[in-house]
Length: 527
Image (cartoon, rainbow, N blue to C red; front, side, top):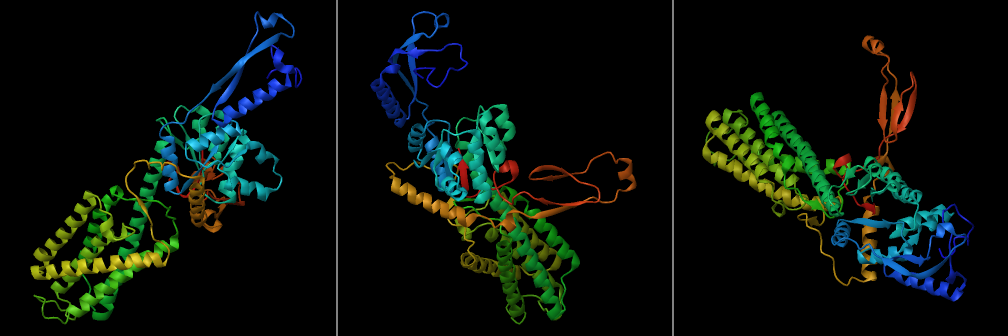
């Protein structure tokens, strides 16, 4: 400000005017210099001096002495973090209060696109469709207000359905942090920002965000593999035992079935600590695909088990008394041990999205499964007199069936569009490719956005209606009638009205980092 009275006298204690303010050519040169510095990423402060105490003189005339350029360079790991998030199919938008030219240069330095719009465009665009499209396609916004940040987050989240994260450190970031599904307060953030956030970083930089993304996807992979395994194992046990009973009338001892279920539950505890791999693309919690994959495992293993039972029943190469029609003790123990091994080995296929040898399980899961298999073999041999050669055949049949089903699994997942795709190994940040052109950046951005669109859950999966009805109070309820009943929804606390029903939209069905048990899915991350 060369002249504080140019736009009207303000309430400042000191009013001044630089003697160069009347020189239009000087002002034009100063503006040009400021633009050049801002394009180089510098913020500038003009310095003017007055000899004496300007507060004692009316309308003091200052002398302009120069511009002081300042730069706030990004951290060394910022470009790597953004490149890593891009590799994980998470787009990043920069929202800043700095000048548009400064924002564009900063975006270039950290590997973002330079399609940066002034915040005024958000406020001045009347056509809502154009505004939504601008927010969706832009790489960022500069010179924004707190309301602009919140509007960007809400548009991405509600209009486009992508899981949206937001980072911030100041009071002006709190509205957007609270609006995002994953609000992240960076190290050194104000209390207001921390209270509005879901995650609080305790280390400088944005690198921990990438680690949180990978760990959340690993957690999701563990949960998904266990759900698929549990459904498939139940199908295998129920169908196999039922069909054998209906066809031959031979029923495995109830005690053995109980022991099988107990061993199976105990041996699966290490799944929670398995060496799961994070996928480069988000894996959606689609119930239909979970059920289809579980059915594939269950039906495939059931079919192979029945083929083994009914074929070897007529084969003389087995030792001992294996006769299904007579339902001998050895036959019952044979079936039991086969199901023990089949249900144990199944986890090695269910836990891996591709071929089982491409992802090694944790040592604890491996030891647990093999230990249970050996224990089951000892029980069959010592308690039920199953010959050792027959136990060897059971192991061989299960290994062959496991490999056949695992190979078919890869084809089946591709057929139902549930293939995991590329895996991310380790937690190291991805190195930035030097000399990447804007054309290549735009192509990668277009590809990521395609993943975003494909990963958006349908409104039926993101929202569901919940009806809250006040029930009649019991005697204890009447005694403690002063206590309020509260229903928690995505929009806070809703007090239930007596004998009334109200539809309440539930929280969107999303997945993300640990604070809200959400998977950090494909979406836009606002910085």
